[in-house]
Image 1: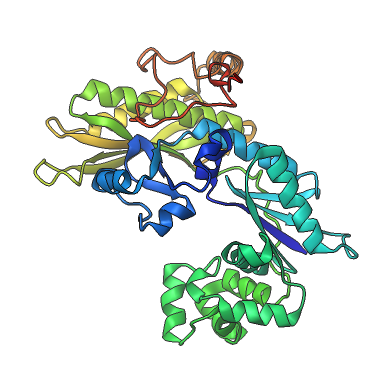
Image 2: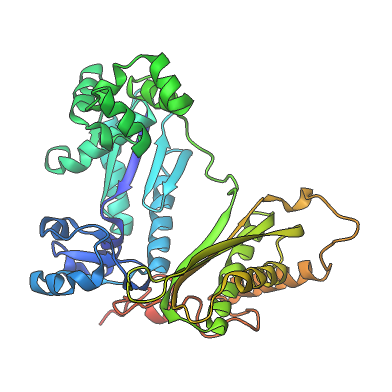
Length: 419
C-alpha cells in the first residue's frame, strides 16, 4: 500500500502554528517581493480570493474582508517541512519527499494493518508534534493514493482527514468522482487529447486501450493508467538524485536600470548556483543568464533576453561561474531599460570527481580549498556571511517583504517569548 501525505494549506498553516489566534481566520501568503498570492487558507478561498492574484489589485479586497496577508517566510516553512517529514519517517522506512508539503509513504510488510487507524495515528502524531494539519490518502498504488488524498481533503468531516481505497468498489467509485483534469500527471497536452476522446473522468481514462495510451501518452501515461487500475506501476522515486540543471531566478525589489546593481544581483544568483552545485558534487559546462523588463509597465521600453556561455572546462567554482555570468550579462544588457527580473541557470552538469580534463584549460587549483572554506564558514555562521566582493554584503536577496513574520524556529532572535 501507498500513502500520500499532504499538509493542508501549508504556508498558511505554518503561520497559524505560531499565531493560533488566526485559526479559522482567512489567511493569504504572498510570493517573492509580495507580488501575488501563492497560498490561501480555506476561509480566504471561500471569500473569493483568486490564486496567483496580483497583491496590489486585491489590497482593498483583503482589507474589506479581513484577510490576514503575510510575506513568504521560507526559512520557517522549510524548517516546518523538515519537522513534518521527520515525523513521517517514523512510520515506514520507505518514503519519497515529493514537495515541501507532500510525501509518499510505501508500506511493505504491513499486510495485517488497519490502514485507516494507522493513517489516523500518523495524522494525530504529526499534529501533536508539529501543529500541522495533514490529509492522508492510502491505496494500493501511488496514483490511487493521490485520488484518495483528494477525497480525504474534500470530505474531511466524513473522513477525518484519512481515506483508504482498499476495495475495487471504492476504487471505481473514486475514479468516477475524479475529473480527468484533477488526475495527477495529466498535463495540458494530454488533457486536450483525452477530451477529444470524450474522457471526462479518471474512470473514463482507465477504459481506453493500452495501445492508444502508450502511443499518445508514452510509457509514463500507460504506467499512470495501470496505477489507476490498481496495478502498481509507479514506485517511489529516489529524491536524492542530482538535478540536471540548477537555476536561481528572482524579481528585483525595485526596477533597476544601472548596470552595477544588476551585476550585483547576477553575481549573487551565480554564487547561489555554484553553492548548490557543490552540495550535490556536480560541475557545470554552461552558464545561462536571463534578463527581463517589467512587462506590466506598458509605457516603459521592454526588453527580454537570454544568452548561453559554454565554459572552457567543467567547474563548481563560484569565482569562475560568477565571472562568466557577468560576461553574459554584458552581452545582453541594454542601457535605459528598467529591468525587473533576472536569473542564472547552470547546466551541462557532470560529477565533479568524473569530469573531463583539458590539458590547456584548467581551473586554478586554489579554487577548491577556497570554496571548501567559504562553504564551511557559511554553514557554521549562517546567512551567507562570506561573499564575493561584488555582492551586497548586507542582504542575501533584495526582496520586498512588508508583511514578514518572525522566523520562529530558525533564528534565535525570533524565538517565541512566553510571558
